[in-house]
Length: 146
Image: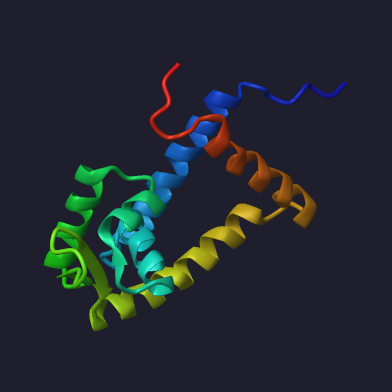
């Protein structure tokens, strides 16, 4: 007799997130770039010169979160912040040469993590998991409390 799969989805999701976060933190500690920093590097790799607010929204971070992240990454010389030429109150973020190297390292690390996450599952199964996780963004919009 086979047992029914565990359906405590919130519990399972939280445990998975914590374990993955700890594993990624330990792995990224070696190259000096955190998972959050890698996220911003990926965004700037696609759109160098993005507005700080746009980058924060893409990472699902509010103004204090993106400000702290940008401060740490600027201090580490991974990115630089420049005033927007059209709006003196806005800041644009740019990759530095050090940041470009860190981006390449982060991409390689992400490929390894994604391969490990998908190991033992078919492409169809991964598509379902990806669709399920993506659905959280509409089921639980940012800032919504009911």
